Image (cartoon, rainbow, N blue to C red; front, side, top):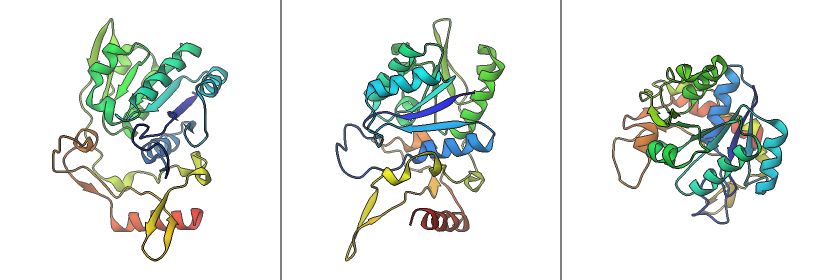
Length: 247
C-alpha cells in the first residue's frame, strides 16, 4: 500500500510565518513512526522545505498513484491543504484524500460538506486512527470505515461522524518521531540563546492536553483537556538521540 503524507506549500503556518525558521512537522513524524512500527511503508513530503510547486506535487502523485494521501491542516494553511487535496483528486482520482490536524478536527462537518475532493477527516490524535484506517481500507467497503473511531467521512451524500477516539494514555508507548523520513538537514529550526546567538534546535513533545479551554487554541480539540506527560526518562532518551544524530 502506497502512503504519502504531505505538508502543503507554505508549511504549517502559511499565513503567519512567511519567512524565517522552519520547524520539523512533529505531528506527521509521530504518525509516520507509528505506521512504520505497524509494518506500513510511508513517505513524508514536506513541500515547503523541498520548495515544491503545485505541478511538482501533481507529478509525484501522478507517478506513484498512492492509495492514501494524508494532508496536515492548520487554520493558517487550510487553503493550501484544500488545494493540495483538490490537485490529488485531479491527477489520481482513486487516491483517498485524508485530512487531519487542528482545523479539520474542529470543523469536520463543514470540511466534508463543502470539499468534495476530501474523502476522510481524522479528528484529534492521529497515530492509532491512521493505523486502523489503513487496515479498514485494506478490508474495503464503508462498513469497515464505520469501525474506525476518530474519523468522519461521507456515505450516500451524508456526513458520518464515528465516535471520538479516546486519547493515548501512556505517551511513553509512542515510538520516537520518524525524523529520518524528512530531509532534516534542510530545516533551519533554531533558537536565540542569550550570549550564544542562534543555535540549532530540535522540537520535542513532552506532554499532550491542556486543562484550560481558551477560545483561540485548538489544543483541547486536538489533544483533550486531560494532561498526559511523558516520563523524564523517555524525554531524556529522545534529547540524547537528537543530539547524537543531529548535533
